[in-house]
Image (cartoon, rainbow, N blue to C red; front, side, top):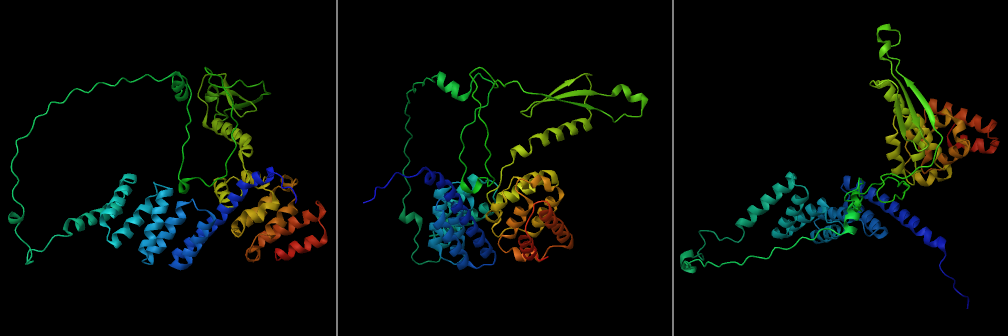
Length: 425
Protein backbone atom coordinates (compact mmCIF):
# COMPACT_ATOMS: atom_id res chain seq x y z
CA UNK A 1 0.00 0.00 0.00
CA UNK A 2 1.35 3.42 -0.90
CA UNK A 3 1.96 5.90 1.88
CA UNK A 4 -0.18 8.99 1.74
CA UNK A 5 1.89 12.09 2.48
CA UNK A 6 0.75 15.29 4.20
CA UNK A 7 -1.36 17.85 2.44
CA UNK A 8 0.81 20.06 0.27
CA UNK A 9 1.14 23.76 1.02
CA UNK A 10 0.15 24.64 -2.55
CA UNK A 11 -3.29 23.07 -2.07
CA UNK A 12 -3.82 25.14 1.09
CA UNK A 13 -2.72 28.32 -0.67
CA UNK A 14 -5.08 27.60 -3.57
CA UNK A 15 -8.17 27.47 -1.33
CA UNK A 16 -8.73 31.29 -1.33
CA UNK A 17 -8.31 31.31 -5.11
CA UNK A 18 -10.91 28.53 -5.46
CA UNK A 19 -13.36 30.41 -3.22
CA UNK A 20 -12.83 33.59 -5.22
CA UNK A 21 -13.54 31.66 -8.43
CA UNK A 22 -16.72 30.18 -6.94
CA UNK A 23 -17.90 33.63 -5.87
CA UNK A 24 -17.28 34.99 -9.36
CA UNK A 25 -19.30 32.17 -10.92
CA UNK A 26 -22.09 32.68 -8.36
CA UNK A 27 -22.13 36.42 -9.09
CA UNK A 28 -22.42 35.65 -12.81
CA UNK A 29 -25.42 33.39 -12.15
CA UNK A 30 -27.00 36.10 -10.00
CA UNK A 31 -26.62 38.66 -12.82
CA UNK A 32 -28.27 36.21 -15.25
CA UNK A 33 -31.08 35.71 -12.75
CA UNK A 34 -31.55 39.48 -12.42
CA UNK A 35 -31.90 39.79 -16.20
CA UNK A 36 -34.61 37.08 -16.17
CA UNK A 37 -36.40 38.93 -13.36
CA UNK A 38 -36.55 42.06 -15.51
CA UNK A 39 -38.19 39.94 -18.24
CA UNK A 40 -40.54 38.39 -15.61
CA UNK A 41 -39.27 34.87 -16.38
CA UNK A 42 -39.53 33.63 -12.81
CA UNK A 43 -38.68 29.93 -13.35
CA UNK A 44 -35.50 30.73 -15.30
CA UNK A 45 -34.48 33.26 -12.63
CA UNK A 46 -35.06 30.70 -9.84
CA UNK A 47 -32.83 28.20 -11.68
CA UNK A 48 -30.03 30.79 -11.85
CA UNK A 49 -30.34 31.65 -8.15
CA UNK A 50 -30.35 27.92 -7.31
CA UNK A 51 -27.00 27.52 -9.05
CA UNK A 52 -25.63 30.61 -7.28
CA UNK A 53 -26.69 29.20 -3.89
CA UNK A 54 -25.08 25.85 -4.68
CA UNK A 55 -21.78 27.67 -5.31
CA UNK A 56 -21.96 30.14 -2.39
CA UNK A 57 -24.33 29.34 0.47
CA UNK A 58 -23.61 32.34 2.76
CA UNK A 59 -24.77 35.25 0.56
CA UNK A 60 -28.09 36.73 1.67
CA UNK A 61 -28.75 38.38 -1.70
CA UNK A 62 -29.22 35.08 -3.53
CA UNK A 63 -31.89 33.86 -1.07
CA UNK A 64 -33.73 37.21 -1.03
CA UNK A 65 -33.82 37.38 -4.84
CA UNK A 66 -35.10 33.81 -5.09
CA UNK A 67 -37.71 34.67 -2.45
CA UNK A 68 -38.91 37.54 -4.67
CA UNK A 69 -39.42 35.08 -7.57
CA UNK A 70 -41.39 32.71 -5.34
CA UNK A 71 -43.46 35.68 -4.19
CA UNK A 72 -44.30 36.57 -7.79
CA UNK A 73 -45.34 32.93 -8.41
CA UNK A 74 -47.55 32.93 -5.26
CA UNK A 75 -45.33 30.26 -3.64
CA UNK A 76 -45.71 32.11 -0.36
CA UNK A 77 -44.29 29.55 2.05
CA UNK A 78 -41.12 29.14 -0.05
CA UNK A 79 -40.80 32.93 -0.30
CA UNK A 80 -41.09 33.27 3.49
CA UNK A 81 -38.46 30.56 4.05
CA UNK A 82 -35.95 32.15 1.66
CA UNK A 83 -36.42 35.60 3.16
CA UNK A 84 -35.97 34.17 6.68
CA UNK A 85 -32.70 32.54 5.57
CA UNK A 86 -31.52 35.86 4.10
CA UNK A 87 -32.33 37.66 7.36
CA UNK A 88 -30.46 35.00 9.31
CA UNK A 89 -27.37 35.67 7.19
CA UNK A 90 -27.79 39.47 7.29
CA UNK A 91 -30.10 40.95 9.99
CA UNK A 92 -29.86 44.41 8.34
CA UNK A 93 -31.22 43.35 4.93
CA UNK A 94 -34.24 45.65 4.50
CA UNK A 95 -35.55 44.10 1.26
CA UNK A 96 -35.68 40.65 2.86
CA UNK A 97 -37.86 42.01 5.72
CA UNK A 98 -40.21 43.75 3.25
CA UNK A 99 -40.61 40.66 1.06
CA UNK A 100 -41.21 38.41 4.06
CA UNK A 101 -43.80 40.89 5.36
CA UNK A 102 -45.63 40.74 2.02
CA UNK A 103 -45.56 36.94 2.03
CA UNK A 104 -46.82 36.76 5.62
CA UNK A 105 -49.57 39.30 4.93
CA UNK A 106 -50.85 37.22 2.03
CA UNK A 107 -50.62 34.08 4.19
CA UNK A 108 -52.78 35.80 6.83
CA UNK A 109 -50.04 36.26 9.48
CA UNK A 110 -50.78 39.96 9.93
CA UNK A 111 -49.05 40.36 13.31
CA UNK A 112 -45.83 38.73 12.07
CA UNK A 113 -45.92 40.88 8.93
CA UNK A 114 -46.36 44.00 11.09
CA UNK A 115 -43.30 43.02 13.15
CA UNK A 116 -41.23 42.71 9.96
CA UNK A 117 -42.30 46.18 8.88
CA UNK A 118 -41.35 47.54 12.30
CA UNK A 119 -37.85 46.15 11.75
CA UNK A 120 -37.75 47.86 8.35
CA UNK A 121 -38.63 51.22 9.92
CA UNK A 122 -35.96 50.75 12.59
CA UNK A 123 -33.36 50.36 9.86
CA UNK A 124 -34.89 52.95 7.49
CA UNK A 125 -37.11 55.39 9.43
CA UNK A 126 -38.06 57.32 6.26
CA UNK A 127 -39.29 54.32 4.26
CA UNK A 128 -42.71 55.60 3.17
CA UNK A 129 -43.77 52.33 1.53
CA UNK A 130 -43.19 50.36 4.74
CA UNK A 131 -45.08 53.00 6.78
CA UNK A 132 -48.11 52.80 4.47
CA UNK A 133 -48.10 48.99 4.49
CA UNK A 134 -47.82 48.88 8.29
CA UNK A 135 -50.69 51.36 8.74
CA UNK A 136 -52.88 49.26 6.44
CA UNK A 137 -52.05 46.15 8.47
CA UNK A 138 -52.90 47.92 11.73
CA UNK A 139 -56.28 48.97 10.35
CA UNK A 140 -57.00 45.39 9.29
CA UNK A 141 -55.90 43.97 12.66
CA UNK A 142 -58.08 46.52 14.45
CA UNK A 143 -61.29 45.26 12.75
CA UNK A 144 -60.40 41.57 12.52
CA UNK A 145 -62.52 39.28 14.69
CA UNK A 146 -65.17 41.88 15.67
CA UNK A 147 -68.76 40.79 15.15
CA UNK A 148 -71.29 42.79 13.21
CA UNK A 149 -73.94 44.75 15.11
CA UNK A 150 -76.72 42.96 13.22
CA UNK A 151 -75.45 39.51 14.21
CA UNK A 152 -78.11 37.57 16.24
CA UNK A 153 -75.43 35.91 18.33
CA UNK A 154 -74.06 39.20 19.60
CA UNK A 155 -74.86 40.02 23.21
CA UNK A 156 -74.52 43.27 25.10
CA UNK A 157 -71.19 43.77 26.76
CA UNK A 158 -72.86 44.66 30.06
CA UNK A 159 -74.41 41.17 30.29
CA UNK A 160 -71.24 39.22 29.57
CA UNK A 161 -68.66 41.25 31.46
CA UNK A 162 -69.56 42.86 34.80
CA UNK A 163 -68.02 46.17 35.74
CA UNK A 164 -64.83 45.66 37.77
CA UNK A 165 -64.90 46.68 41.40
CA UNK A 166 -62.85 49.69 42.36
CA UNK A 167 -59.91 48.74 44.52
CA UNK A 168 -58.10 51.42 46.51
CA UNK A 169 -54.50 51.84 45.35
CA UNK A 170 -51.77 50.40 47.54
CA UNK A 171 -48.83 52.54 48.51
CA UNK A 172 -45.58 50.59 48.75
CA UNK A 173 -42.41 52.23 49.98
CA UNK A 174 -39.43 51.25 47.87
CA UNK A 175 -36.01 50.89 49.39
CA UNK A 176 -33.17 52.90 47.99
CA UNK A 177 -31.03 50.84 45.69
CA UNK A 178 -27.35 50.86 46.43
CA UNK A 179 -25.32 53.00 44.05
CA UNK A 180 -23.02 50.88 41.95
CA UNK A 181 -19.46 52.03 41.90
CA UNK A 182 -18.08 52.73 38.46
CA UNK A 183 -14.59 51.35 38.27
CA UNK A 184 -12.08 53.46 36.39
CA UNK A 185 -10.67 51.80 33.26
CA UNK A 186 -7.53 49.76 33.74
CA UNK A 187 -4.22 50.59 32.12
CA UNK A 188 -4.82 47.92 29.49
CA UNK A 189 -8.26 49.33 28.60
CA UNK A 190 -6.86 52.87 28.42
CA UNK A 191 -4.09 51.64 26.13
CA UNK A 192 -6.57 49.82 23.87
CA UNK A 193 -8.78 52.93 23.55
CA UNK A 194 -5.80 55.25 23.00
CA UNK A 195 -6.66 57.46 25.99
CA UNK A 196 -4.14 60.26 26.53
CA UNK A 197 -2.37 59.72 23.20
CA UNK A 198 -2.69 61.61 19.94
CA UNK A 199 -3.65 58.53 17.94
CA UNK A 200 -6.74 57.12 16.24
CA UNK A 201 -7.75 53.62 17.30
CA UNK A 202 -9.04 51.54 14.38
CA UNK A 203 -11.46 48.84 15.51
CA UNK A 204 -12.72 45.95 13.35
CA UNK A 205 -16.08 46.37 11.66
CA UNK A 206 -17.99 43.60 9.91
CA UNK A 207 -20.18 44.56 6.96
CA UNK A 208 -22.92 42.34 5.53
CA UNK A 209 -22.11 40.73 2.16
CA UNK A 210 -24.36 43.01 0.06
CA UNK A 211 -22.65 46.15 1.43
CA UNK A 212 -19.05 45.00 0.96
CA UNK A 213 -16.90 46.61 -1.72
CA UNK A 214 -16.15 44.61 -4.85
CA UNK A 215 -12.87 46.44 -5.53
CA UNK A 216 -9.54 44.67 -5.24
CA UNK A 217 -7.82 44.87 -1.87
CA UNK A 218 -4.64 46.93 -1.52
CA UNK A 219 -1.76 46.04 0.73
CA UNK A 220 -0.91 48.72 3.32
CA UNK A 221 2.45 48.60 5.13
CA UNK A 222 2.17 48.60 8.94
CA UNK A 223 4.85 50.37 11.01
CA UNK A 224 5.31 49.59 14.69
CA UNK A 225 5.42 52.78 16.77
CA UNK A 226 6.59 52.77 20.41
CA UNK A 227 4.17 54.20 22.96
CA UNK A 228 4.46 57.95 23.29
CA UNK A 229 5.43 58.57 19.65
CA UNK A 230 3.04 59.69 16.93
CA UNK A 231 4.95 58.64 13.80
CA UNK A 232 7.71 56.15 12.96
CA UNK A 233 11.29 57.19 12.48
CA UNK A 234 12.12 57.29 8.79
CA UNK A 235 15.57 56.65 7.39
CA UNK A 236 17.34 59.43 5.53
CA UNK A 237 16.18 59.68 1.94
CA UNK A 238 17.36 61.52 -1.12
CA UNK A 239 15.32 64.67 -1.63
CA UNK A 240 14.15 66.24 -4.82
CA UNK A 241 13.87 70.04 -4.83
CA UNK A 242 11.10 71.50 -6.95
CA UNK A 243 10.83 75.28 -7.20
CA UNK A 244 7.48 76.76 -8.20
CA UNK A 245 7.08 80.42 -9.10
CA UNK A 246 3.87 82.32 -9.63
CA UNK A 247 3.86 83.75 -13.16
CA UNK A 248 0.31 85.14 -13.15
CA UNK A 249 1.59 88.71 -12.79
CA UNK A 250 4.24 88.35 -15.52
CA UNK A 251 4.45 91.48 -17.65
CA UNK A 252 2.92 93.81 -15.05
CA UNK A 253 5.55 95.86 -13.25
CA UNK A 254 3.07 96.92 -10.58
CA UNK A 255 2.50 93.35 -9.48
CA UNK A 256 6.08 92.11 -9.48
CA UNK A 257 6.23 92.49 -5.71
CA UNK A 258 3.46 89.89 -5.41
CA UNK A 259 5.57 87.10 -6.93
CA UNK A 260 5.91 84.15 -4.67
CA UNK A 261 8.75 81.67 -4.70
CA UNK A 262 8.32 78.45 -2.82
CA UNK A 263 10.52 75.43 -2.46
CA UNK A 264 8.85 72.03 -2.13
CA UNK A 265 10.81 69.08 -0.82
CA UNK A 266 9.43 65.71 -1.95
CA UNK A 267 10.86 62.63 -0.28
CA UNK A 268 10.65 59.05 -1.48
CA UNK A 269 7.57 58.37 0.62
CA UNK A 270 5.55 60.93 -1.34
CA UNK A 271 5.33 63.51 1.50
CA UNK A 272 5.66 67.15 0.61
CA UNK A 273 7.32 69.76 2.82
CA UNK A 274 7.06 73.39 1.85
CA UNK A 275 9.50 76.20 2.65
CA UNK A 276 8.09 79.62 1.80
CA UNK A 277 10.73 82.26 1.27
CA UNK A 278 8.26 85.14 1.09
CA UNK A 279 5.42 84.92 3.59
CA UNK A 280 2.60 85.34 1.06
CA UNK A 281 -0.31 83.22 -0.18
CA UNK A 282 0.47 80.55 -2.81
CA UNK A 283 -1.31 81.14 -6.09
CA UNK A 284 -3.95 78.60 -7.22
CA UNK A 285 -1.88 77.75 -10.31
CA UNK A 286 1.11 76.80 -8.16
CA UNK A 287 -1.05 74.69 -5.86
CA UNK A 288 -2.59 72.83 -8.82
CA UNK A 289 0.83 72.20 -10.32
CA UNK A 290 2.10 70.85 -7.02
CA UNK A 291 -0.93 68.56 -6.54
CA UNK A 292 -0.59 67.20 -10.07
CA UNK A 293 3.11 66.55 -9.49
CA UNK A 294 2.57 64.60 -6.28
CA UNK A 295 -0.34 62.61 -7.73
CA UNK A 296 1.76 61.48 -10.68
CA UNK A 297 4.46 60.29 -8.31
CA UNK A 298 2.22 57.88 -6.40
CA UNK A 299 -0.57 57.00 -8.84
CA UNK A 300 0.94 53.92 -10.50
CA UNK A 301 2.33 52.58 -7.21
CA UNK A 302 -1.20 52.32 -5.79
CA UNK A 303 -2.64 50.44 -8.77
CA UNK A 304 -3.62 46.79 -8.33
CA UNK A 305 -4.25 44.46 -11.32
CA UNK A 306 -7.94 43.42 -11.54
CA UNK A 307 -9.10 39.83 -11.15
CA UNK A 308 -12.49 40.23 -12.87
CA UNK A 309 -14.37 42.60 -15.15
CA UNK A 310 -16.25 44.29 -12.29
CA UNK A 311 -13.06 45.37 -10.57
CA UNK A 312 -11.63 46.55 -13.88
CA UNK A 313 -14.67 48.71 -14.77
CA UNK A 314 -14.73 50.34 -11.32
CA UNK A 315 -11.07 51.39 -11.62
CA UNK A 316 -11.49 52.33 -15.29
CA UNK A 317 -14.36 54.72 -14.51
CA UNK A 318 -12.33 56.36 -11.75
CA UNK A 319 -9.54 57.07 -14.29
CA UNK A 320 -11.90 58.68 -16.78
CA UNK A 321 -10.28 61.66 -18.51
CA UNK A 322 -6.74 60.67 -17.50
CA UNK A 323 -5.27 58.77 -20.46
CA UNK A 324 -1.83 58.56 -18.87
CA UNK A 325 -3.24 56.84 -15.78
CA UNK A 326 -5.31 54.50 -17.97
CA UNK A 327 -2.18 53.59 -19.92
CA UNK A 328 -0.35 52.84 -16.65
CA UNK A 329 -3.26 50.70 -15.47
CA UNK A 330 -3.31 48.71 -18.71
CA UNK A 331 0.46 48.15 -18.52
CA UNK A 332 0.21 46.34 -15.14
CA UNK A 333 -2.33 43.80 -16.50
CA UNK A 334 -0.86 40.48 -17.62
CA UNK A 335 -2.06 39.97 -21.25
CA UNK A 336 -2.42 36.21 -20.71
CA UNK A 337 -5.06 36.90 -18.00
CA UNK A 338 -7.20 39.21 -20.17
CA UNK A 339 -9.56 36.36 -21.32
CA UNK A 340 -10.20 35.24 -17.73
CA UNK A 341 -10.60 38.81 -16.44
CA UNK A 342 -13.22 39.87 -19.00
CA UNK A 343 -14.75 36.46 -19.81
CA UNK A 344 -17.71 37.65 -21.94
CA UNK A 345 -17.99 41.18 -20.48
CA UNK A 346 -15.62 43.10 -22.80
CA UNK A 347 -17.40 46.02 -24.50
CA UNK A 348 -16.66 47.73 -27.82
CA UNK A 349 -15.77 51.19 -26.36
CA UNK A 350 -13.27 49.59 -23.96
CA UNK A 351 -11.69 47.59 -26.81
CA UNK A 352 -11.35 50.77 -28.85
CA UNK A 353 -9.69 52.53 -25.91
CA UNK A 354 -7.27 49.63 -25.48
CA UNK A 355 -6.16 49.93 -29.10
CA UNK A 356 -5.65 53.69 -28.86
CA UNK A 357 -3.65 53.37 -25.62
CA UNK A 358 -1.44 50.63 -27.07
CA UNK A 359 -0.79 52.77 -30.13
CA UNK A 360 -0.13 55.91 -28.05
CA UNK A 361 2.98 54.56 -26.28
CA UNK A 362 4.15 51.14 -27.48
CA UNK A 363 7.35 51.35 -25.42
CA UNK A 364 5.34 51.24 -22.18
CA UNK A 365 4.14 47.72 -23.04
CA UNK A 366 7.52 46.38 -24.19
CA UNK A 367 7.85 44.13 -21.11
CA UNK A 368 4.72 42.24 -22.19
CA UNK A 369 4.86 43.09 -25.95
CA UNK A 370 2.00 44.57 -27.94
CA UNK A 371 1.56 41.19 -29.69
CA UNK A 372 0.66 39.56 -26.36
CA UNK A 373 -2.00 42.20 -25.67
CA UNK A 374 -3.57 41.79 -29.12
CA UNK A 375 -3.50 38.00 -28.77
CA UNK A 376 -5.07 38.19 -25.29
CA UNK A 377 -7.87 40.47 -26.51
CA UNK A 378 -8.62 38.17 -29.46
CA UNK A 379 -9.15 35.22 -27.08
CA UNK A 380 -11.96 36.91 -25.13
CA UNK A 381 -15.35 35.22 -25.50
CA UNK A 382 -17.63 36.48 -28.31
CA UNK A 383 -14.72 38.54 -29.67
CA UNK A 384 -15.90 38.02 -33.25
CA UNK A 385 -19.01 40.09 -32.44
CA UNK A 386 -16.81 42.90 -31.06
CA UNK A 387 -14.55 42.85 -34.13
CA UNK A 388 -17.57 43.51 -36.36
CA UNK A 389 -18.10 46.93 -34.73
CA UNK A 390 -14.51 48.23 -35.08
CA UNK A 391 -14.45 51.66 -36.71
CA UNK A 392 -12.20 52.65 -39.61
CA UNK A 393 -10.01 54.56 -37.18
CA UNK A 394 -9.65 51.46 -35.01
CA UNK A 395 -8.68 49.38 -38.03
CA UNK A 396 -6.05 51.92 -39.05
CA UNK A 397 -4.66 51.82 -35.51
CA UNK A 398 -4.62 48.00 -35.65
CA UNK A 399 -2.70 47.99 -38.93
CA UNK A 400 -0.13 50.31 -37.40
CA UNK A 401 0.17 48.08 -34.30
CA UNK A 402 0.57 44.95 -36.43
CA UNK A 403 3.31 46.67 -38.42
CA UNK A 404 5.06 47.42 -35.13
CA UNK A 405 4.68 43.78 -34.06
CA UNK A 406 6.22 42.64 -37.34
CA UNK A 407 9.16 45.04 -37.53
CA UNK A 408 10.04 45.69 -33.87
CA UNK A 409 8.84 42.59 -32.02
CA UNK A 410 9.74 40.19 -34.87
CA UNK A 411 6.30 38.60 -34.93
CA UNK A 412 5.99 35.83 -37.55
CA UNK A 413 3.88 36.14 -40.69
CA UNK A 414 1.63 33.31 -39.47
CA UNK A 415 0.83 35.15 -36.20
CA UNK A 416 0.22 38.41 -38.07
CA UNK A 417 -2.18 36.66 -40.47
CA UNK A 418 -3.97 34.98 -37.55
CA UNK A 419 -4.45 38.32 -35.74
CA UNK A 420 -5.69 39.98 -38.94
CA UNK A 421 -8.20 37.18 -39.36
CA UNK A 422 -9.48 37.48 -35.76
CA UNK A 423 -9.73 41.28 -35.94
CA UNK A 424 -11.40 40.95 -39.39
CA UNK A 425 -8.97 43.27 -41.15
